[in-house]
Structures are given as C-alpha cells and as structure tokens.
Image (cartoon, rainbow, N blue to C red):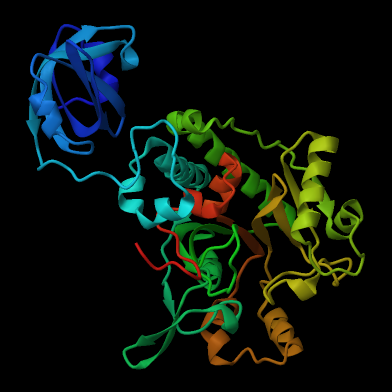
Length: 427
C-alpha cells in the first residue's frame, strides 16, 4: 500500500511504497539521490550502483518506489528510502518550462501563468492556492457552526445584478442572458427561506480594469442573514468568518505559509471602525469625495496600525450615492449608508452592510433612480419582499484578494489558479 512522503519518518525499518513525481536527481561519485515529490512533500531515495535508470528518468516523470526506510538526519524528515525498486508509471517526462526543483521560482509571472498546469506543481507557486483552499474551509466551518445553510445560486441570469455595463452577455437558447456579477439577489431571497445562508462560488465582472487587483472572474465568499439590528451586526459576523478563515489557514496550510515566509495576522475581537466622513479627514482627502481612492485606503490602514495596532479597519457610512439601491440608509442621516468596507493592510477586502427589507422602500428607492419595481429586472427579485422579509444584511469577500493581501503578493494573479482578465483566456 502506498504511503505519503510525510509518513516515511514513522516507518523506519519497514518496507514501504511511495509514488509521485521525480522532483530532482542528484548524482555523486558512489551514490545518487532521487528526490520524489507527492502531495505531502518530498522524499529522498538512495540509489547505489548503476545510474543508468536515473539518467532515463527526467524530472517530473511519475514513478513508484518500493524500499526500506532508514534513519538519516540529513534527509527530509530525518529518514530516507534505501535499496529501492523504481518503477516508472509514465514514459519519461519532457523538460518542464520552469525548474520546479529550485527552491525559488526563477521565471516571471507571465511565464508561470502561460504554463500554469505545470508551473503550479512548484511548491511555492501552489502555496497560494493551498492557503485559499484552507481559507474556504474556514469560511464554511465558521458560518456552518452558526447555523448558516450553504446554497448555490445560478451563474446564468436574465438581468444584471448591479450594473448593466459590467456584465458578460451570452446567447441562452437564442435569447439574451448574462454571467452573474454576484449572488446578491438570490442570497437575499434565501434569507426568507433559511434565515442564514452563505455561498462559495465564481462571479464575473466585465470591468475593463488592467490592474494588479482586478480579475474578470474570481471566487466570492458571500453571506446573508436575517433578524439584524443594523450593519454592525453584519460586521461582527464578518469578523467571526475572517477569524475562522485565518485559524483554518494556520491549521491546514502551515507548510504553505512557511514556504512563503508568511506570518498570520490576528483580527481584533473589536475591529476598529471609523465613519466615512472621518476617514476622509484621516486620509487628507477632499471632504466632498464620494469614495475612497487607493491612496486613501492605504492611509487609513496605516492609521489603524498606528492607533489601534490592527491590520484590519472598517469604514462605515459610505455615501448612499456610491452604494447599490438595496442598501439601507443611515436612519439619523440618509445621506450616509448603513454599510461598510473592511480594509486589510490598506486595501478594501470586503463590502457589507444592511439591506432594505420593506417592499415599499424598494419601490421608493427604484423610483428615485427613475426605475420601476415592476420592471423585469426587479419583479422576481422583489417578490420575496412582498411576502415579508426580516431586517437583514450580508457581505462578500473576494477570495483571491484576501490571499494576495495575506501573502503579500504584488499581483492577485500570483494566487489565482487560472486567472481571467482583459488579456488572458487560456490556459
């Protein structure tokens, strides 16, 4: 029976079988070493005598090795396999586009992305997605433990969720349809069914951005829940979700963190909160600005670290003119919204807030925009509100942006398996 490389140290003196990829071959005068890579790490196999077989096994050839485990403090994990019988499971592999055995990635990002199916085998390249996978697990666990129901909503929709200019149109059996920008409408409707819901899935934004922060397709971690008082309840739930994500990354992706030299931050129990109007003052921005520029976000992030020792800070009360129509206004001053952005290390990571929940409020909000609640774009969405919806709110986390900020990646594409943007549709 096959064992994994990390199990080898516990099998000293036993005959074992391992299988994986030829990570590297090292030849010395009297002995050679085959370094095998599997999903758990690296294993060292000692090959004595003829090196002819090693010469035939190029890096990345898939092999199975059976031999005896011997202790060796200099080997990975303190043990190695000796007297091996090596069986190739494929023909000799072609030379990889990048040198996967080197501890660092020597190729530039375009080369890595062009050759992603193979480049992702590099332990450093794949580390980003190991962290992402752990974060998704933590998100699910954190919300499931608070009685949320996981849902999956359509990704082919009849109308745009937020902006008709930023959707990908497609032909749906001869009629128009679009790729979903978010599950917003559906997750709100499902609050009327399950009270608390979350979704992990792709969203699509046809925004012509060509920056290190934006993708045309990314993974969104969405949550929506009912019977809240205001957006501060949403922020508390978000804090719980992010704490669960960080905990899961530490528990499940420790090796990836070590490879990237990353130390996990802590999210405070009480995340610092600053009102949008005050945030503009902190950033030294024009008081009439309706939104925060990237430089403003960085300044507010520095303020949070300096004043609160926190790498997380929430900015609440964004102007209603910059929020979607379903956003609940601040009761004391309707110019502002009961919404927030969570900044992490000076970059907006999450948008969340309280939603409108009364049908009459939706009618008024849409009328103020010159639109009708009876329009096809809204009629099915608002059906739930005609039949009673509780006060509710939610948030959405961009997974790839979260991992990029956590790892210090300069470009979000570094931690995306197969990024899609203005210029990339393959591989």
